[in-house]
Image (cartoon, helix red, strand yellow):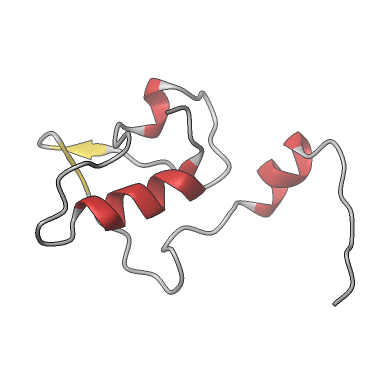
Length: 77
């Protein structure tokens, strides 16, 4: 349930689909994080906007991601 904006974007998109009945956590980012790794999800009239950007709709903020990353590994194709 404690997902960053990356997981939250996917959950909100799934929850918005017709007939989808079991969404994951769709709370505002600031409920769990002082700073998220994506632009924050905020409530408007009790709802989150469905991301409409390409992919899952939320890109990590490079500076924040760099700050919280502890290790990286490159796996060549």
